[in-house]
Length: 207
Image (cartoon, rainbow, N blue to C red; front, side):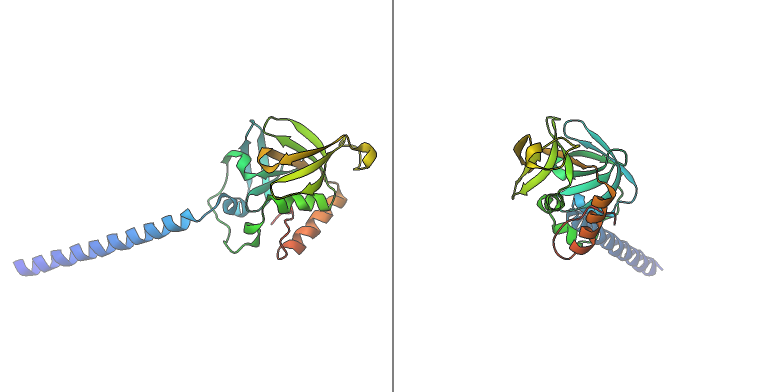
């Protein structure tokens, strides 16, 4: 009887060891998968309202419309759609645990792609930098790490006679770019978004 009890105890110990090994392997796999998750992956999968605290103290509240490799667009409704570089985000509240698929082509679209959409459609913007300074105008030129803003009053079209200054702005200084789109411009963004999923241009539209 003693030998039978000993073998039973040994079998129980082996079963416990195997169970612990499996749990450890699963935990290691989860940690490895989480290590590959980027913040933009969680933004793209988010469903619901979030609150973002940005550098300089601005709070942005709304629903995520889209997100690329290093940017997110939030619909603030009363203020417009806000393009936010992820380097400007200090913290996010209300962000879900879901993660977008790594094969999502938007994962490869950088801030420059989003800015080129604005430039292509001549969308009037409000640019806020880390010093809380605000400039209004139209994105004229988009480089690798900067863009050029033709500054003009928000109520005026981008015409040579209306341009007050041409300002070169590095990406790293941007906190938020707000667009107050009319119905026509919104339609252009929707069309751009649907056609650019496979072509490499970012569109600001709901998933």
